[in-house]
Length: 394
Image (tube, rainbow, N blue to C red):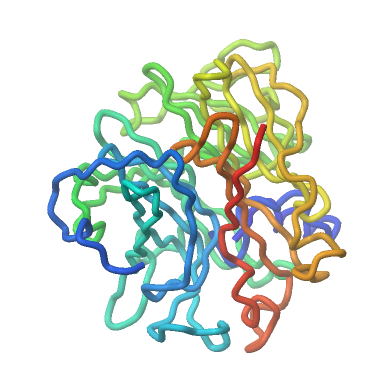
């Protein structure tokens, strides 16, 4: 589900704030998925992702990705529609896994994209891949010292809230995985790092995107108005040494309004480095450009445009936004996929699939229809709530 869309709807019924983490959040069996822990490298460049309904997976949002070092790409999805029945044409009466699901993809020598969803079951029912007893959405994963780190936002139901998105953010955790080289994620050993005490209120999404640069990990937290920082809305910049990931207290620094790095994490004093105001985006370094490129979906007009900006430094200054996709079909009244309750979010780049002069991006569209209804727009239309892939020049 999208955090940015929720906050916005509760304020002005429009989705200015939460069009980025959404409330119904975030192939065939191939020989390389045998569970044996040895690599089979493939170059992903020139291979275009796709997300067919199979392996029990019928749509999820988020779609963060990271290239594992043997040529496999890990995909992370938020809340996911699931069913044991293959070939479903709609989601009526389909279960929804609240939390995180995952998939792994490879590219063949011929450039064919192959993906397998690894859905987890417990006592015969599909469950979240992480945190059996907690509802947690995935954020941008990263690797440090040959360990895989998956940031997670802890969510709790909030039935008293107005609007269709009845949840609240109650914590921040990181799933740390040492044996991610094993091909079957069901065999991964997960250790949870609880960062909740180190993250102040107002930080709706710590790892909206993550960047490992030098000996530090940088995050672009999406911050919303809070009691301590009532005027803050946008993406700030924080960093932490790579050797303090297991002990974050006192180790974080934030980029302040006076363009200096300061100890701690204080949204009230932090600089809005990116005014995108989204809880999901990507920031990746493009060697050919010698610049960092940020990709995100506009938080305005229900997410009607895919944008990018560039900078020489992670701190900026960032260029003015430029358009990658001018009209997102699902929110364009002239398009057949349009519905008045559609909104789109979760725009990001997947650099491991990039071609020269082109970015490979995804976004996701959701619906404001009442999810308590047995039949609604999102359950009747499988094209919605799937990552939409675009290869776009920039």
